[in-house]
Length: 180
Image (cartoon, rainbow, N blue to C red; front, side, top):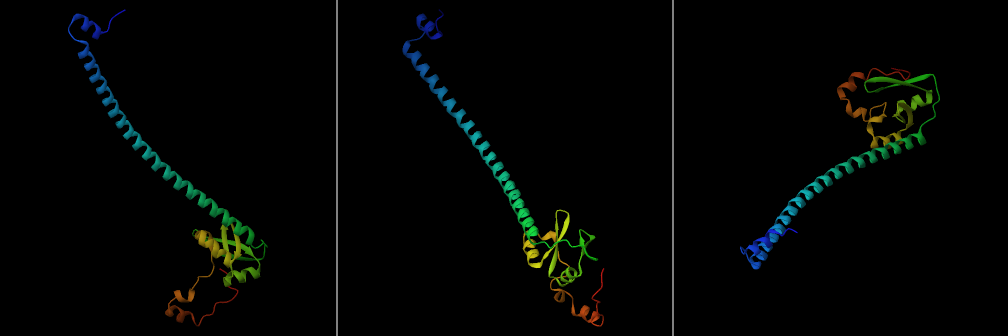
């Protein structure tokens, strides 16, 4: 069997056992030191990777939470509309309103038409359909999602128009049966 280099050097008399052990210790110390430094470098890299992953997870959790919240809001709106929508009685009168710069119309009976014009009822867009609900329900829905509620009369209309405009139109009465 072949002898190690250390044994061969000791047999040749070029080194002593004590010197060989000392060199072996120094070699082991250096190996441990290199291993420690290598581990610390990889542990730093691992910590950075873990931090990056944690940041990605936080962002994903925020997105998931937003989707959950939107889903809950949609379910709440659906429930409010389904419980409180007025039955679809097809009448002879149309009510017209604007949705995304397009004029839409739905059939209503005269009583609904009067209530819509007086602001007691509102129109809600729900899943590409339009439903008529009481004003208080429309206000609840408007707090959740303001873009699906259509009010036919401007709130605070008298305050918004100037006195000059009011004076201009004071001699002209608007007929009750005016439809646009």
